[in-house]
Image (cartoon, rainbow, N blue to C red; front, side, top):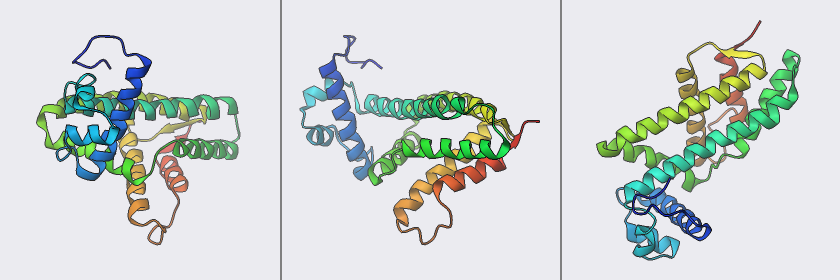
Length: 217
């Protein structure tokens, strides 16, 4: 995504600056919320001036969308990698072996997902900001629709490799799995010792995935 404030190519140095600004923004957003965060605070956190910010992003909203797209791309790429490296190489399997492969795939996906406090809070703030700001809601919704479709297509391919299919629509499946994973992230922060939880993330997601799919005859 090229900043609206410039049409010049993004050099390696500039890309590094943008990454540092986005990382700083995530930290500030997590602690203060997006509405409460200022450009000055983001710059201070990153160790840059306001000039460095505005030479890369035309506004805080542009930074917001850059973060959303970066986050979504990361999730899609992670799932694509797992389908290609875990499910495809497994090939045809017995039902028991397929279930083991599916478990390994879920383990691999969760292993590359950040679950630290800052990340979880920042992701929540991105959603809340879209809800609270009608000017960005439509574009945010469009981006969400794109990533859900991409995610659903890859997940469908993965299920086909394990000879399973959804018993609900793709949209419902993604909503159920996404909500479950998100709730587990919040539970882990609120209840770090797991005293109120009876199942691990992998087993819970596996059970739900099995519940909303069926073997292909």
